[in-house]
Image (cartoon, rainbow, N blue to C red; front, side, top):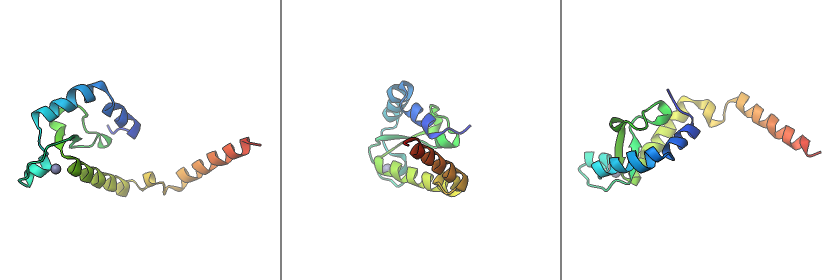
Length: 114
Ligand SMILES: [Zn+2]
């Protein structure tokens, strides 16, 4: 099951995530895992889903979590976004159907003003 971005946001804003899962992960694994693999010790600030929620990863399963520093988290998210866009060109706004329905909505809003 994959989630929409608003569902992902809801999970990240949930009490379970903010007050329980996230702090617990950082308590158990206080150092960035990617840096650690390069023999570097960096304090983790982010909790990342190894398999992204958008791709159907489990939000609260400890085996799907890893602690990351800000830098590694940004790099990983950017790479995931790049891959998502490459796999689903529709989402990049290039789908003509999506574009024309947005244009129609815009036009009807415009016409309502008169
Ligand atoms: Zn790192």
